[in-house]
Image (cartoon, rainbow, N blue to C red; front, side, top):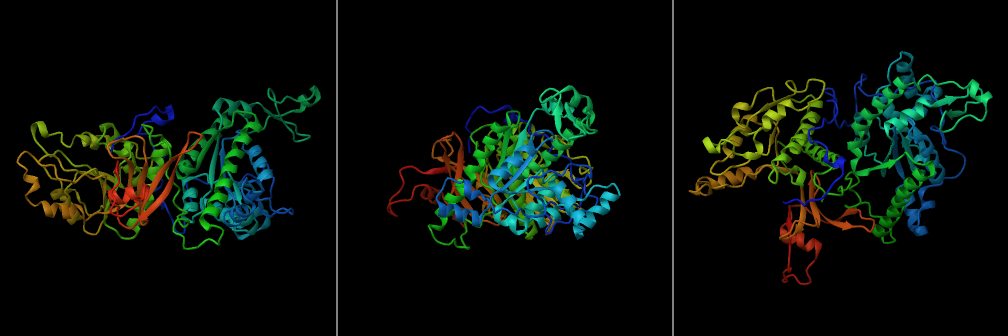
Amino acid sequence: MAASSSSSSPAAASAPFAAPGPHRRPGLALRPSPPTPPSSSLSCCRASPAAAAVSSVSATAAPNRGPRGMGLRCRASEGAAAAARKEAPLKVMISGAPASGKGTQCRMIVEKYGLVHISTGDLLRAEVSSGTEIGKKAKEYMDNGMLVPDQVVTDMVVSRLSQPDVRERGWLLDGYPRSYAQAQSLESMKIRPDIFIVLEVPDDILIDRCVGRRLDPETGKIYHIKNFPPENDEVSARLVTRSDDTFEKVKSRLDTYKQNSEAVIPTYSDLLNQIDGNRQVEVVFNEIDSLLQKICENASFNMLAKTNGKPQDSKDTTASKNEFRGIPTRLNNIPHSREIRKYFYNDVLVATRHAVEDKKTRLQIDINIPELNPEMDVYRIGTLMELVRELSLSFADDGKRVKVCVQGSMGQGAFAGIPLQLAGTRKILEIMDWGEYGAKGTFINFGAVGASEVDKEDDMFILIAPQNAVGNCIIDDMKAMTDAAGDRPVILVNPRLKDMPGSSGVMQTMGRDMRLKYAASFETCYSFRLLFYAGSFYPIMGALRMAYPNKYEIYRRVDEPNGQERYVLLEEFVEKPTPDEITNAFRPRKNENEKSASGFCKG
């Protein structure tokens, strides 16, 4: 596979060794089912009795007026809009730092689309006030000055989402989830939004908005000394600064928000829409409104296309793929943005965990987007190691001891550096950030490829790009290692196990069949390759994806008038499709005996 060159934004060039966030406590499951985080969960929601309980829609009861679901605003046929509203009401998550204007935008979204506004602060206060079972649990923590655990907050949110008004009208989750554990709890229950909106405002503006705020204690009205000054000197004289609007406290709240946001965003990277919040309120809302309108139109169009005017078949395999979030765009841009890399890390992780949970022990990951293909550029090994770190930390979260293995030199003298792509990888792994809870050296260790590296305390093994070299074969060492590992999982990440014959051609003859049979014994749990026209590497025509336990899926890349792109599912295959099958998926033959003039090749 080859990559196309393209300019990219500064954000897209972020260093591949950027930390993925602090390592989560060993033993805290990534995908609990059902989720059961410990009571001392690291990220929690504090219920502040003094916090303002302002919400345009009650968190506990539906308003008296009739629903104003998204269908009222969709520019689609009445029948299709009604079907879309019935089958898939609009679901929105919104996030923003303190003083980013999130509250104002929430009110405007609710006013136009009739969504149920759900704020965890409002929920906590309502549950405690009502004396529900969940409220009693939350009150115990609050009375003791403790943070309310993720599980209690998640239970409240899930309970609210299950109520009839939410199911009918859709929801707007305000500032939730706030932690990785909360996001993964929702993921495990298949609760996902249609869009994840983040309001972006520069720190200096946010700090100025907060520090400059003033409260009129008599009227409760909020002013700003520069942006919205009081009407007269009498009001000005009685204004006070709220206790949490000092520079130090605002800075602390911003830092907390950033940590929470960094932990949550990767889960929703494919749904992420970052909005410039440093503009007029109406301008910001117009952009949000445009995005929501597009979702409504797409929902109506897709419903009409799928049903063709008939009730939707519940066995429709395409419609059942709700948990797949679609392929990210801008894959022509090199280097890929951090959001794209995070998307693939999560996609690989989910598939791999499913395979391991199904007791698969010999697995391989085959992902060759340009940013994860060190064959093209040795620099890319850094991104591959970042993927390995995400996998390793995730399994370490479950209390598993992971051995990360890099093959050593396979030659002498001039050949001592072979394979070149892996030169120095072991040393780089040693100095990478493995989190603040001491994962490295306890739950994660490093080794080479071979039987001697298998220790009895190891629970699983991840091998980084094991590969044959000219005249040398890694498979013998791998087989000895898997024999020693027994029924413990061994995961190969981007292996290259084809023969690389020396001048004598010895690798093509001696034991070749047995070597290839062993290499084929590893089951693919994740595969992603870009598709091009044969003989070219630009533009990307589509993609081939398989994420265990799903089928192989062929997608076509479609350019849109606004300069964006999207991927459309064309066909599915139980087994890996051949080049001819891929070509036919894009351009079906008129005659079975007729061959295509030009085919597609896999990147």
